Length: 633
Image (cartoon, rainbow, N blue to C red; front, side, top):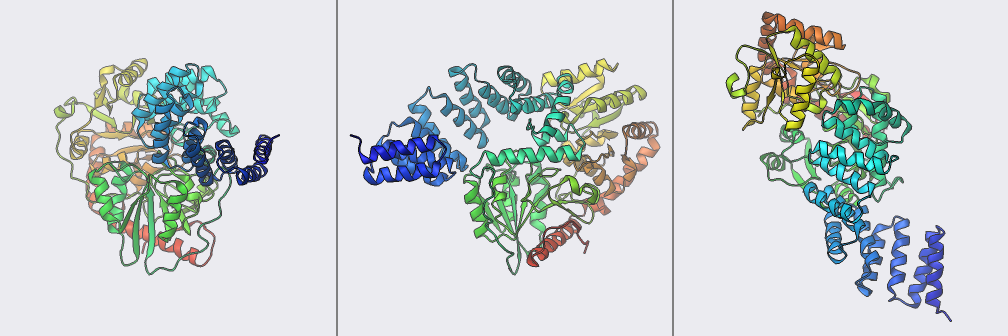
Protein backbone atom coordinates (compact mmCIF):
# COMPACT_ATOMS: atom_id res chain seq x y z
CA UNK A 1 0.00 0.00 0.00
CA UNK A 2 1.33 3.46 -0.98
CA UNK A 3 2.14 6.00 1.68
CA UNK A 4 0.39 9.37 1.95
CA UNK A 5 3.56 11.06 0.67
CA UNK A 6 3.62 8.82 -2.43
CA UNK A 7 -0.05 9.50 -3.15
CA UNK A 8 0.40 13.26 -2.89
CA UNK A 9 3.52 13.06 -5.06
CA UNK A 10 1.73 11.10 -7.79
CA UNK A 11 -1.17 13.53 -7.63
CA UNK A 12 1.27 16.41 -8.02
CA UNK A 13 2.86 14.80 -11.11
CA UNK A 14 -0.56 14.19 -12.69
CA UNK A 15 -1.73 17.75 -12.04
CA UNK A 16 1.51 19.15 -13.40
CA UNK A 17 1.19 17.07 -16.56
CA UNK A 18 -2.39 18.34 -16.92
CA UNK A 19 -1.24 21.96 -16.68
CA UNK A 20 -2.65 22.64 -13.20
CA UNK A 21 0.54 23.99 -11.67
CA UNK A 22 -1.12 25.57 -8.63
CA UNK A 23 -2.79 22.29 -7.81
CA UNK A 24 0.44 20.41 -8.40
CA UNK A 25 2.29 22.73 -6.04
CA UNK A 26 -0.29 22.13 -3.32
CA UNK A 27 0.05 18.38 -3.78
CA UNK A 28 3.83 18.51 -3.57
CA UNK A 29 3.61 20.65 -0.44
CA UNK A 30 1.32 18.05 1.10
CA UNK A 31 3.81 15.32 0.18
CA UNK A 32 6.62 17.23 1.87
CA UNK A 33 4.56 17.58 5.04
CA UNK A 34 4.53 13.79 5.22
CA UNK A 35 8.08 13.17 3.92
CA UNK A 36 10.28 16.28 3.84
CA UNK A 37 13.45 14.56 2.59
CA UNK A 38 12.37 13.09 -0.75
CA UNK A 39 14.45 14.59 -3.57
CA UNK A 40 11.88 13.83 -6.28
CA UNK A 41 9.19 15.86 -4.48
CA UNK A 42 11.43 18.93 -4.19
CA UNK A 43 12.31 18.50 -7.88
CA UNK A 44 8.63 18.32 -8.92
CA UNK A 45 7.85 21.29 -6.72
CA UNK A 46 10.62 23.29 -8.40
CA UNK A 47 9.22 22.44 -11.83
CA UNK A 48 5.75 23.67 -10.87
CA UNK A 49 7.20 26.89 -9.47
CA UNK A 50 9.04 27.46 -12.74
CA UNK A 51 5.80 27.08 -14.69
CA UNK A 52 4.24 29.64 -12.34
CA UNK A 53 7.27 31.88 -13.05
CA UNK A 54 8.19 31.92 -9.37
CA UNK A 55 11.86 31.44 -10.12
CA UNK A 56 13.31 32.47 -6.74
CA UNK A 57 11.28 29.78 -4.97
CA UNK A 58 12.09 27.27 -7.70
CA UNK A 59 15.82 27.82 -7.12
CA UNK A 60 15.41 26.98 -3.44
CA UNK A 61 13.38 23.87 -4.30
CA UNK A 62 16.08 22.58 -6.66
CA UNK A 63 18.77 23.33 -4.07
CA UNK A 64 16.85 21.22 -1.51
CA UNK A 65 16.60 18.43 -4.06
CA UNK A 66 20.35 18.48 -4.77
CA UNK A 67 21.18 18.63 -1.06
CA UNK A 68 19.37 15.31 -0.70
CA UNK A 69 20.56 13.83 -4.03
CA UNK A 70 23.78 15.54 -5.22
CA UNK A 71 23.74 13.58 -8.48
CA UNK A 72 20.24 14.68 -9.56
CA UNK A 73 21.24 15.94 -13.04
CA UNK A 74 17.81 17.29 -13.98
CA UNK A 75 17.57 19.37 -10.80
CA UNK A 76 21.06 20.76 -11.35
CA UNK A 77 20.15 21.69 -14.91
CA UNK A 78 16.80 23.28 -14.04
CA UNK A 79 18.43 25.18 -11.17
CA UNK A 80 20.86 26.73 -13.66
CA UNK A 81 18.00 27.55 -16.05
CA UNK A 82 16.09 29.36 -13.29
CA UNK A 83 19.18 31.50 -12.68
CA UNK A 84 19.29 32.24 -16.42
CA UNK A 85 15.65 33.33 -16.33
CA UNK A 86 16.54 35.80 -13.59
CA UNK A 87 19.56 36.96 -15.65
CA UNK A 88 21.94 36.13 -12.82
CA UNK A 89 24.61 35.40 -15.35
CA UNK A 90 27.61 34.78 -13.11
CA UNK A 91 25.71 32.42 -10.81
CA UNK A 92 24.24 30.62 -13.83
CA UNK A 93 27.69 30.26 -15.38
CA UNK A 94 29.09 28.74 -12.19
CA UNK A 95 26.20 26.27 -12.06
CA UNK A 96 26.55 25.29 -15.72
CA UNK A 97 30.33 24.92 -15.52
CA UNK A 98 29.86 22.48 -12.66
CA UNK A 99 27.21 20.63 -14.65
CA UNK A 100 29.25 20.16 -17.84
CA UNK A 101 32.23 18.97 -15.79
CA UNK A 102 30.06 16.37 -14.09
CA UNK A 103 28.04 15.45 -17.22
CA UNK A 104 30.19 16.25 -20.28
CA UNK A 105 27.75 14.59 -22.68
CA UNK A 106 24.79 16.77 -21.63
CA UNK A 107 24.35 18.77 -24.83
CA UNK A 108 21.64 21.07 -23.44
CA UNK A 109 23.95 22.10 -20.60
CA UNK A 110 26.73 22.96 -23.09
CA UNK A 111 24.22 24.91 -25.17
CA UNK A 112 23.10 27.03 -22.25
CA UNK A 113 26.66 27.37 -20.99
CA UNK A 114 27.37 28.95 -24.37
CA UNK A 115 24.37 31.25 -24.08
CA UNK A 116 25.41 32.55 -20.68
CA UNK A 117 28.97 33.19 -21.89
CA UNK A 118 27.47 35.12 -24.78
CA UNK A 119 25.37 37.20 -22.38
CA UNK A 120 28.58 37.99 -20.49
CA UNK A 121 30.27 39.11 -23.71
CA UNK A 122 32.70 36.16 -23.76
CA UNK A 123 31.99 35.21 -27.36
CA UNK A 124 35.10 33.14 -28.14
CA UNK A 125 34.42 30.88 -25.17
CA UNK A 126 30.73 30.76 -26.08
CA UNK A 127 31.64 29.51 -29.55
CA UNK A 128 33.85 26.78 -28.06
CA UNK A 129 30.90 25.59 -25.95
CA UNK A 130 28.48 25.49 -28.87
CA UNK A 131 31.03 23.43 -30.79
CA UNK A 132 30.74 20.86 -28.01
CA UNK A 133 27.00 20.72 -28.70
CA UNK A 134 27.61 20.13 -32.40
CA UNK A 135 30.01 17.27 -31.61
CA UNK A 136 27.28 15.61 -29.57
CA UNK A 137 24.38 16.54 -31.91
CA UNK A 138 25.72 17.22 -35.41
CA UNK A 139 22.21 17.77 -36.84
CA UNK A 140 21.09 20.26 -34.18
CA UNK A 141 19.75 23.21 -36.16
CA UNK A 142 19.39 25.35 -33.05
CA UNK A 143 23.08 24.84 -32.24
CA UNK A 144 24.05 25.95 -35.74
CA UNK A 145 21.86 29.01 -35.21
CA UNK A 146 23.58 29.79 -31.91
CA UNK A 147 26.99 29.32 -33.55
CA UNK A 148 25.94 31.83 -36.20
CA UNK A 149 24.98 34.36 -33.53
CA UNK A 150 28.39 34.07 -31.89
CA UNK A 151 30.25 34.27 -35.18
CA UNK A 152 28.30 37.46 -35.92
CA UNK A 153 29.38 38.89 -32.56
CA UNK A 154 32.99 38.01 -33.43
CA UNK A 155 32.71 39.78 -36.82
CA UNK A 156 33.29 36.48 -38.65
CA UNK A 157 30.48 37.20 -41.06
CA UNK A 158 31.18 34.68 -43.81
CA UNK A 159 31.40 31.84 -41.31
CA UNK A 160 28.21 33.14 -39.66
CA UNK A 161 26.42 32.90 -43.00
CA UNK A 162 27.53 29.30 -43.41
CA UNK A 163 26.34 28.31 -39.93
CA UNK A 164 23.00 30.10 -40.29
CA UNK A 165 22.40 28.66 -43.76
CA UNK A 166 23.01 25.20 -42.28
CA UNK A 167 20.52 25.95 -39.49
CA UNK A 168 17.90 26.85 -42.11
CA UNK A 169 18.71 23.78 -44.15
CA UNK A 170 17.97 21.61 -41.10
CA UNK A 171 14.87 23.61 -40.12
CA UNK A 172 13.51 25.87 -42.90
CA UNK A 173 10.88 27.27 -40.50
CA UNK A 174 13.45 28.75 -38.12
CA UNK A 175 12.56 32.42 -38.44
CA UNK A 176 15.30 33.46 -36.00
CA UNK A 177 17.94 31.83 -38.17
CA UNK A 178 16.52 33.53 -41.24
CA UNK A 179 16.59 36.95 -39.58
CA UNK A 180 20.19 36.47 -38.47
CA UNK A 181 21.20 35.18 -41.90
CA UNK A 182 20.04 38.53 -43.26
CA UNK A 183 22.22 40.24 -40.63
CA UNK A 184 25.22 38.13 -41.59
CA UNK A 185 24.76 38.82 -45.32
CA UNK A 186 24.45 42.54 -44.56
CA UNK A 187 27.60 42.58 -42.45
CA UNK A 188 29.50 40.58 -45.07
CA UNK A 189 28.29 42.98 -47.80
CA UNK A 190 27.05 39.91 -49.67
CA UNK A 191 24.65 41.97 -51.76
CA UNK A 192 23.55 39.14 -54.05
CA UNK A 193 22.36 37.01 -51.14
CA UNK A 194 20.89 40.01 -49.35
CA UNK A 195 18.80 41.24 -52.27
CA UNK A 196 17.41 37.73 -52.68
CA UNK A 197 16.36 37.60 -49.01
CA UNK A 198 14.90 41.09 -48.61
CA UNK A 199 11.39 40.59 -50.08
CA UNK A 200 10.77 37.65 -47.76
CA UNK A 201 12.25 39.58 -44.84
CA UNK A 202 10.03 42.65 -45.17
CA UNK A 203 6.91 40.51 -45.58
CA UNK A 204 7.81 38.31 -42.61
CA UNK A 205 8.38 41.30 -40.32
CA UNK A 206 4.93 42.60 -41.16
CA UNK A 207 3.48 39.13 -40.52
CA UNK A 208 5.41 38.78 -37.27
CA UNK A 209 6.97 35.48 -38.37
CA UNK A 210 10.60 36.65 -38.39
CA UNK A 211 12.45 38.57 -35.69
CA UNK A 212 15.43 40.37 -37.23
CA UNK A 213 17.75 42.56 -35.14
CA UNK A 214 16.42 46.15 -35.46
CA UNK A 215 19.93 47.49 -36.11
CA UNK A 216 19.99 45.32 -39.21
CA UNK A 217 16.70 46.71 -40.47
CA UNK A 218 17.89 50.31 -40.02
CA UNK A 219 20.47 49.69 -42.74
CA UNK A 220 17.90 48.07 -45.05
CA UNK A 221 14.70 50.10 -44.83
CA UNK A 222 13.74 53.75 -44.41
CA UNK A 223 10.14 52.82 -43.56
CA UNK A 224 9.39 54.10 -40.01
CA UNK A 225 6.35 51.84 -39.74
CA UNK A 226 8.37 48.73 -40.57
CA UNK A 227 11.04 49.81 -38.08
CA UNK A 228 8.35 50.14 -35.40
CA UNK A 229 6.99 46.67 -36.13
CA UNK A 230 10.49 45.19 -36.00
CA UNK A 231 11.26 46.93 -32.69
CA UNK A 232 8.01 45.72 -31.12
CA UNK A 233 8.70 42.13 -32.14
CA UNK A 234 12.21 42.28 -30.70
CA UNK A 235 11.13 43.87 -27.43
CA UNK A 236 8.46 41.21 -27.02
CA UNK A 237 11.01 38.48 -27.75
CA UNK A 238 13.56 39.93 -25.34
CA UNK A 239 11.03 39.98 -22.52
CA UNK A 240 9.75 36.49 -23.31
CA UNK A 241 13.27 35.18 -22.73
CA UNK A 242 13.36 36.56 -19.17
CA UNK A 243 11.48 35.95 -15.96
CA UNK A 244 9.04 38.70 -16.92
CA UNK A 245 7.62 36.79 -19.85
CA UNK A 246 4.73 38.56 -21.51
CA UNK A 247 3.09 39.74 -18.30
CA UNK A 248 3.47 43.26 -16.98
CA UNK A 249 4.84 43.40 -13.42
CA UNK A 250 3.28 45.67 -10.87
CA UNK A 251 4.82 49.15 -11.11
CA UNK A 252 7.59 49.66 -8.59
CA UNK A 253 7.11 53.44 -8.61
CA UNK A 254 3.66 54.93 -8.16
CA UNK A 255 4.41 58.66 -8.21
CA UNK A 256 7.04 61.34 -8.63
CA UNK A 257 9.65 62.08 -6.00
CA UNK A 258 10.34 65.52 -4.55
CA UNK A 259 14.09 65.92 -4.26
CA UNK A 260 16.09 69.12 -3.93
CA UNK A 261 18.01 68.01 -7.04
CA UNK A 262 16.51 65.95 -9.85
CA UNK A 263 18.15 62.53 -9.95
CA UNK A 264 19.04 61.45 -13.48
CA UNK A 265 20.06 57.83 -13.95
CA UNK A 266 21.90 56.97 -17.16
CA UNK A 267 21.53 53.24 -17.91
CA UNK A 268 23.98 51.73 -20.40
CA UNK A 269 26.10 48.70 -21.25
CA UNK A 270 28.51 50.98 -23.12
CA UNK A 271 30.32 52.96 -20.39
CA UNK A 272 33.62 51.69 -21.79
CA UNK A 273 35.72 52.11 -24.94
CA UNK A 274 32.64 52.65 -27.10
CA UNK A 275 31.21 55.47 -29.28
CA UNK A 276 28.27 56.06 -26.90
CA UNK A 277 30.67 56.64 -24.03
CA UNK A 278 32.68 59.03 -26.16
CA UNK A 279 29.57 61.06 -26.99
CA UNK A 280 27.89 61.17 -23.60
CA UNK A 281 30.79 61.71 -21.20
CA UNK A 282 30.96 65.49 -21.65
CA UNK A 283 27.23 65.74 -20.87
CA UNK A 284 27.73 63.83 -17.61
CA UNK A 285 30.60 66.13 -16.69
CA UNK A 286 28.75 69.37 -17.46
CA UNK A 287 25.38 68.80 -15.81
CA UNK A 288 24.42 71.62 -13.43
CA UNK A 289 25.04 70.02 -10.04
CA UNK A 290 22.94 72.63 -8.29
CA UNK A 291 19.85 71.19 -10.01
CA UNK A 292 20.80 67.63 -10.99
CA UNK A 293 22.36 64.60 -9.33
CA UNK A 294 23.86 62.14 -11.82
CA UNK A 295 23.83 58.34 -11.48
CA UNK A 296 25.73 56.03 -13.83
CA UNK A 297 24.07 52.60 -14.07
CA UNK A 298 26.45 50.29 -15.92
CA UNK A 299 25.17 46.96 -17.25
CA UNK A 300 28.27 46.03 -19.27
CA UNK A 301 31.75 44.67 -18.65
CA UNK A 302 34.36 46.96 -17.14
CA UNK A 303 37.34 47.44 -19.48
CA UNK A 304 39.53 49.85 -17.46
CA UNK A 305 39.65 52.19 -20.47
CA UNK A 306 40.18 55.93 -20.07
CA UNK A 307 36.56 56.46 -21.17
CA UNK A 308 35.30 54.15 -18.41
CA UNK A 309 37.28 55.97 -15.72
CA UNK A 310 36.28 59.38 -17.06
CA UNK A 311 32.59 58.39 -16.89
CA UNK A 312 32.95 57.01 -13.35
CA UNK A 313 34.49 60.31 -12.28
CA UNK A 314 31.76 62.30 -14.06
CA UNK A 315 28.94 60.63 -12.09
CA UNK A 316 27.95 61.54 -8.54
CA UNK A 317 27.13 57.86 -8.01
CA UNK A 318 28.26 54.99 -10.24
CA UNK A 319 26.84 51.47 -9.93
CA UNK A 320 27.99 48.40 -11.86
CA UNK A 321 24.81 46.31 -12.13
CA UNK A 322 25.83 44.08 -15.02
CA UNK A 323 26.12 40.94 -12.90
CA UNK A 324 22.70 41.07 -11.22
CA UNK A 325 19.27 40.14 -12.50
CA UNK A 326 16.80 42.60 -13.93
CA UNK A 327 14.50 42.56 -10.91
CA UNK A 328 17.42 43.23 -8.57
CA UNK A 329 18.75 45.98 -10.85
CA UNK A 330 15.33 47.61 -10.96
CA UNK A 331 15.07 47.39 -7.18
CA UNK A 332 18.46 49.11 -6.82
CA UNK A 333 17.32 51.91 -9.12
CA UNK A 334 14.09 52.19 -7.14
CA UNK A 335 16.00 52.37 -3.84
CA UNK A 336 18.13 55.18 -5.30
CA UNK A 337 14.91 57.11 -6.03
CA UNK A 338 15.93 57.99 -9.56
CA UNK A 339 13.58 60.65 -10.94
CA UNK A 340 14.35 60.15 -14.65
CA UNK A 341 15.90 56.94 -15.99
CA UNK A 342 17.60 57.50 -19.36
CA UNK A 343 18.26 54.35 -21.39
CA UNK A 344 21.32 54.82 -23.64
CA UNK A 345 21.08 51.45 -25.38
CA UNK A 346 17.81 50.93 -27.20
CA UNK A 347 18.02 47.99 -29.58
CA UNK A 348 21.79 47.59 -29.40
CA UNK A 349 23.89 44.82 -27.91
CA UNK A 350 23.57 44.78 -24.14
CA UNK A 351 20.08 46.31 -23.90
CA UNK A 352 18.17 45.23 -20.75
CA UNK A 353 14.50 46.05 -21.45
CA UNK A 354 13.35 43.91 -18.52
CA UNK A 355 14.87 46.46 -16.13
CA UNK A 356 12.76 49.19 -17.73
CA UNK A 357 9.58 47.12 -17.70
CA UNK A 358 9.71 46.96 -13.91
CA UNK A 359 9.09 50.76 -13.99
CA UNK A 360 11.85 51.58 -11.49
CA UNK A 361 11.55 55.35 -12.03
CA UNK A 362 8.63 57.79 -12.50
CA UNK A 363 9.96 58.81 -15.93
CA UNK A 364 11.79 56.60 -18.44
CA UNK A 365 13.38 57.98 -21.62
CA UNK A 366 15.52 56.50 -24.38
CA UNK A 367 18.35 58.48 -25.93
CA UNK A 368 21.39 58.37 -28.21
CA UNK A 369 22.37 54.70 -28.47
CA UNK A 370 19.76 53.64 -31.02
CA UNK A 371 18.29 55.97 -33.63
CA UNK A 372 14.75 54.64 -33.56
CA UNK A 373 11.86 53.60 -31.39
CA UNK A 374 12.24 50.87 -28.78
CA UNK A 375 8.73 49.63 -29.54
CA UNK A 376 8.25 49.42 -25.75
CA UNK A 377 5.07 50.83 -24.23
CA UNK A 378 6.84 51.24 -20.89
CA UNK A 379 9.34 53.82 -22.23
CA UNK A 380 7.81 57.29 -21.93
CA UNK A 381 9.98 59.52 -24.13
CA UNK A 382 12.45 59.40 -27.00
CA UNK A 383 14.89 62.33 -27.10
CA UNK A 384 15.65 63.86 -30.51
CA UNK A 385 15.45 67.22 -32.21
CA UNK A 386 13.35 68.95 -34.90
CA UNK A 387 15.54 67.51 -37.67
CA UNK A 388 15.74 63.83 -36.66
CA UNK A 389 12.40 63.41 -34.89
CA UNK A 390 9.81 65.76 -36.39
CA UNK A 391 6.51 65.38 -34.56
CA UNK A 392 5.08 63.82 -37.73
CA UNK A 393 7.09 60.69 -36.82
CA UNK A 394 5.02 60.29 -33.65
CA UNK A 395 2.69 57.55 -34.98
CA UNK A 396 5.74 55.36 -35.78
CA UNK A 397 7.05 55.54 -32.21
CA UNK A 398 5.72 54.04 -28.99
CA UNK A 399 7.43 56.82 -27.03
CA UNK A 400 6.47 60.50 -27.00
CA UNK A 401 8.91 62.68 -28.91
CA UNK A 402 11.00 65.24 -27.03
CA UNK A 403 12.80 67.70 -29.28
CA UNK A 404 15.92 69.43 -28.00
CA UNK A 405 16.26 73.04 -29.18
CA UNK A 406 19.02 72.47 -31.76
CA UNK A 407 20.73 69.09 -32.09
CA UNK A 408 20.21 65.93 -30.06
CA UNK A 409 23.87 65.08 -30.69
CA UNK A 410 26.39 65.85 -27.90
CA UNK A 411 29.84 66.82 -29.20
CA UNK A 412 32.64 66.42 -26.71
CA UNK A 413 34.56 69.72 -26.55
CA UNK A 414 37.59 67.73 -25.40
CA UNK A 415 37.93 66.08 -28.80
CA UNK A 416 41.55 66.31 -29.90
CA UNK A 417 42.65 68.63 -32.65
CA UNK A 418 43.34 66.80 -35.92
CA UNK A 419 47.00 65.78 -36.21
CA UNK A 420 48.40 66.45 -39.69
CA UNK A 421 48.71 63.36 -41.90
CA UNK A 422 49.98 63.54 -45.47
CA UNK A 423 48.38 61.84 -48.45
CA UNK A 424 51.40 59.61 -48.78
CA UNK A 425 51.03 58.53 -45.14
CA UNK A 426 47.34 57.87 -45.75
CA UNK A 427 48.06 55.78 -48.86
CA UNK A 428 46.30 58.22 -51.20
CA UNK A 429 47.40 59.44 -54.64
CA UNK A 430 48.76 62.96 -54.42
CA UNK A 431 46.77 64.50 -57.30
CA UNK A 432 43.39 62.70 -57.09
CA UNK A 433 40.01 64.05 -56.02
CA UNK A 434 39.21 61.91 -52.98
CA UNK A 435 35.64 60.86 -52.31
CA UNK A 436 35.52 59.07 -48.98
CA UNK A 437 33.15 57.26 -46.63
CA UNK A 438 34.33 56.16 -43.19
CA UNK A 439 30.98 54.68 -42.21
CA UNK A 440 30.89 50.99 -41.33
CA UNK A 441 30.97 49.18 -44.66
CA UNK A 442 27.77 47.24 -43.95
CA UNK A 443 25.90 50.56 -44.29
CA UNK A 444 26.92 50.74 -47.96
CA UNK A 445 24.00 49.51 -50.05
CA UNK A 446 24.25 48.59 -53.75
CA UNK A 447 22.03 51.45 -54.92
CA UNK A 448 24.34 53.97 -53.24
CA UNK A 449 27.42 52.18 -54.55
CA UNK A 450 25.91 52.60 -58.04
CA UNK A 451 25.80 56.35 -57.42
CA UNK A 452 29.40 56.37 -56.21
CA UNK A 453 30.54 54.43 -59.28
CA UNK A 454 28.84 56.96 -61.55
CA UNK A 455 30.62 59.76 -59.66
CA UNK A 456 33.97 58.02 -60.18
CA UNK A 457 33.25 57.73 -63.91
CA UNK A 458 32.22 61.40 -64.09
CA UNK A 459 35.30 62.61 -62.21
CA UNK A 460 38.14 60.73 -63.99
CA UNK A 461 40.90 61.78 -61.57
CA UNK A 462 38.98 60.60 -58.49
CA UNK A 463 39.26 57.70 -56.04
CA UNK A 464 36.91 56.26 -53.41
CA UNK A 465 38.40 55.89 -49.91
CA UNK A 466 36.51 53.48 -47.62
CA UNK A 467 37.25 51.53 -44.46
CA UNK A 468 39.61 48.58 -44.57
CA UNK A 469 38.03 45.33 -43.43
CA UNK A 470 39.10 41.72 -43.74
CA UNK A 471 40.51 40.54 -47.12
CA UNK A 472 37.39 38.77 -48.40
CA UNK A 473 35.24 41.85 -47.79
CA UNK A 474 37.76 44.16 -49.46
CA UNK A 475 37.79 41.79 -52.45
CA UNK A 476 34.00 42.06 -52.67
CA UNK A 477 34.18 45.83 -53.01
CA UNK A 478 36.87 45.57 -55.68
CA UNK A 479 34.70 43.06 -57.53
CA UNK A 480 31.62 45.29 -57.29
CA UNK A 481 33.66 48.20 -58.66
CA UNK A 482 34.81 46.10 -61.64
CA UNK A 483 31.19 45.08 -62.33
CA UNK A 484 30.39 48.79 -62.63
CA UNK A 485 33.28 49.49 -64.96
CA UNK A 486 35.60 51.02 -62.35
CA UNK A 487 39.26 50.09 -62.09
CA UNK A 488 39.57 48.32 -58.75
CA UNK A 489 42.73 50.33 -58.00
CA UNK A 490 40.48 53.37 -57.58
CA UNK A 491 39.04 51.82 -54.42
CA UNK A 492 41.42 52.72 -51.58
CA UNK A 493 41.10 51.16 -48.13
CA UNK A 494 41.74 53.16 -44.95
CA UNK A 495 43.33 51.07 -42.21
CA UNK A 496 43.34 51.80 -38.50
CA UNK A 497 45.40 54.72 -37.24
CA UNK A 498 47.50 54.61 -34.09
CA UNK A 499 45.58 57.52 -32.55
CA UNK A 500 42.20 59.18 -32.89
CA UNK A 501 43.84 62.56 -33.56
CA UNK A 502 45.65 61.06 -36.57
CA UNK A 503 42.39 59.54 -37.80
CA UNK A 504 40.84 63.01 -37.64
CA UNK A 505 43.90 64.49 -39.32
CA UNK A 506 43.89 62.15 -42.29
CA UNK A 507 40.32 63.21 -43.10
CA UNK A 508 41.68 66.59 -44.18
CA UNK A 509 43.26 64.73 -47.11
CA UNK A 510 39.81 63.78 -48.43
CA UNK A 511 37.83 66.25 -50.53
CA UNK A 512 34.25 65.15 -49.94
CA UNK A 513 32.55 62.66 -47.61
CA UNK A 514 29.80 60.64 -49.33
CA UNK A 515 27.20 59.53 -46.80
CA UNK A 516 25.35 56.22 -46.84
CA UNK A 517 21.58 55.66 -46.92
CA UNK A 518 19.28 54.73 -45.24
CA UNK A 519 21.64 54.34 -42.26
CA UNK A 520 23.40 57.69 -42.40
CA UNK A 521 26.60 58.75 -40.65
CA UNK A 522 26.25 59.65 -36.97
CA UNK A 523 29.48 59.80 -34.94
CA UNK A 524 31.38 59.40 -38.21
CA UNK A 525 29.78 62.55 -39.63
CA UNK A 526 30.33 64.48 -36.42
CA UNK A 527 34.01 63.52 -36.50
CA UNK A 528 34.33 64.44 -40.19
CA UNK A 529 32.76 67.86 -39.61
CA UNK A 530 35.05 68.47 -36.63
CA UNK A 531 37.99 67.56 -38.89
CA UNK A 532 36.77 70.09 -41.50
CA UNK A 533 35.57 67.57 -44.09
CA UNK A 534 32.27 68.44 -45.86
CA UNK A 535 29.64 65.69 -45.97
CA UNK A 536 26.93 65.19 -48.59
CA UNK A 537 23.91 63.28 -47.28
CA UNK A 538 20.51 62.04 -48.40
CA UNK A 539 17.76 62.80 -45.86
CA UNK A 540 15.13 60.06 -45.56
CA UNK A 541 11.91 59.51 -43.63
CA UNK A 542 13.10 57.74 -40.47
CA UNK A 543 15.14 58.89 -37.48
CA UNK A 544 18.23 56.95 -38.56
CA UNK A 545 18.19 58.43 -42.08
CA UNK A 546 17.90 62.01 -40.83
CA UNK A 547 20.78 62.20 -38.33
CA UNK A 548 23.48 63.43 -40.70
CA UNK A 549 21.08 65.99 -42.18
CA UNK A 550 20.50 67.30 -38.66
CA UNK A 551 24.21 67.57 -37.98
CA UNK A 552 24.75 69.52 -41.20
CA UNK A 553 21.86 71.86 -40.37
CA UNK A 554 23.50 72.55 -37.02
CA UNK A 555 26.76 73.67 -38.68
CA UNK A 556 24.93 75.87 -41.20
CA UNK A 557 25.47 73.59 -44.21
CA UNK A 558 21.88 72.68 -45.11
CA UNK A 559 22.79 72.98 -48.80
CA UNK A 560 24.69 69.68 -48.47
CA UNK A 561 21.46 67.82 -47.67
CA UNK A 562 19.68 66.14 -50.59
CA UNK A 563 16.09 64.91 -50.62
CA UNK A 564 16.46 62.30 -53.40
CA UNK A 565 19.16 60.02 -54.78
CA UNK A 566 19.24 62.06 -57.98
CA UNK A 567 19.76 65.29 -56.04
CA UNK A 568 22.45 63.65 -53.91
CA UNK A 569 24.40 62.54 -56.99
CA UNK A 570 24.05 65.91 -58.70
CA UNK A 571 25.15 67.77 -55.55
CA UNK A 572 28.26 65.62 -55.06
CA UNK A 573 29.18 65.94 -58.74
CA UNK A 574 28.78 69.71 -58.76
CA UNK A 575 31.05 70.06 -55.71
CA UNK A 576 33.66 67.78 -57.27
CA UNK A 577 33.65 69.85 -60.46
CA UNK A 578 33.52 73.27 -58.80
CA UNK A 579 36.55 73.27 -56.52
CA UNK A 580 36.07 76.94 -55.68
CA UNK A 581 32.60 76.26 -54.31
CA UNK A 582 33.92 73.29 -52.34
CA UNK A 583 36.72 75.44 -50.91
CA UNK A 584 34.15 77.99 -49.76
CA UNK A 585 32.18 75.24 -48.01
CA UNK A 586 35.33 74.05 -46.24
CA UNK A 587 36.10 77.59 -45.05
CA UNK A 588 32.60 78.03 -43.68
CA UNK A 589 32.87 74.67 -41.92
CA UNK A 590 36.19 75.68 -40.35
CA UNK A 591 34.55 78.84 -38.96
CA UNK A 592 31.53 76.88 -37.72
CA UNK A 593 33.70 74.91 -35.31
CA UNK A 594 33.79 78.01 -33.10
CA UNK A 595 30.19 79.18 -33.43
CA UNK A 596 27.86 76.38 -34.61
CA UNK A 597 25.22 74.82 -32.30
CA UNK A 598 26.60 71.35 -33.08
CA UNK A 599 29.82 72.14 -31.22
CA UNK A 600 28.25 74.28 -28.47
CA UNK A 601 28.29 71.78 -25.62
CA UNK A 602 27.18 74.24 -22.98
CA UNK A 603 24.14 75.17 -25.08
CA UNK A 604 23.40 71.47 -25.64
CA UNK A 605 23.50 70.78 -21.91
CA UNK A 606 21.10 73.65 -21.21
CA UNK A 607 18.71 72.24 -23.80
CA UNK A 608 18.66 68.67 -22.50
CA UNK A 609 18.38 69.90 -18.92
CA UNK A 610 15.35 71.97 -19.96
CA UNK A 611 13.87 68.76 -21.36
CA UNK A 612 14.50 66.91 -18.10
CA UNK A 613 12.95 69.73 -16.08
CA UNK A 614 9.79 69.57 -18.22
CA UNK A 615 9.56 65.77 -17.97
CA UNK A 616 9.95 65.97 -14.19
CA UNK A 617 7.41 68.78 -13.82
CA UNK A 618 4.82 66.84 -15.81
CA UNK A 619 5.40 63.75 -13.67
CA UNK A 620 4.99 65.80 -10.49
CA UNK A 621 1.70 67.16 -11.81
CA UNK A 622 0.56 63.60 -12.53
CA UNK A 623 0.32 64.21 -16.28
CA UNK A 624 0.70 61.50 -18.85
CA UNK A 625 3.76 61.77 -21.15
CA UNK A 626 3.17 63.99 -24.19
CA UNK A 627 5.36 65.25 -27.03
CA UNK A 628 7.03 68.62 -26.56
CA UNK A 629 9.94 70.79 -27.67
CA UNK A 630 12.34 71.85 -24.93
CA UNK A 631 13.10 75.51 -24.43
CA UNK A 632 16.51 76.89 -25.31
CA UNK A 633 16.85 78.85 -22.07
